Amino acid sequence: MPINRTELVAQIAERANLTKVEADAALGAFQDVLVESLGKGEAVKITGLFSVERVERAARTGRNPRTGEEIQIPAGFGVKLSAGSTLKKAVAK
Image (cartoon, rainbow, N blue to C red; front, side, top):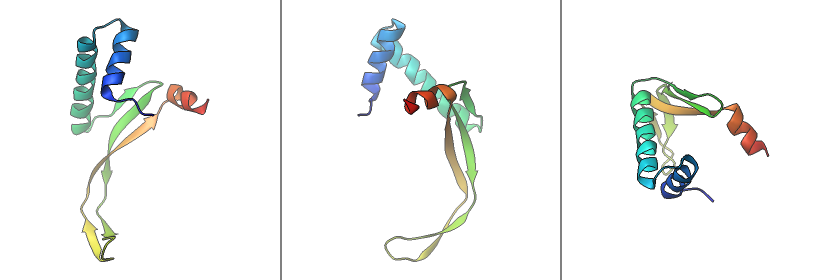
């Protein structure tokens, strides 16, 4: 069962001895930094946990699943998330 933002904030507040408001502000700040950095093309790496980077996607030909018609998909950007060693160990249990 996934954890939503409210539950995540509550757990962070409890473990870091913060109020829920402070934990929510910290999580919001983290989100802002992550989005801003990726928008600039900068990678974000938290050793052992994960790394996130913006990747370029080349233009390509795709297919409309309803009609089968070929369509041109323009070049753009995507996000690549790589798990760190701590995260990999946690899910391997």
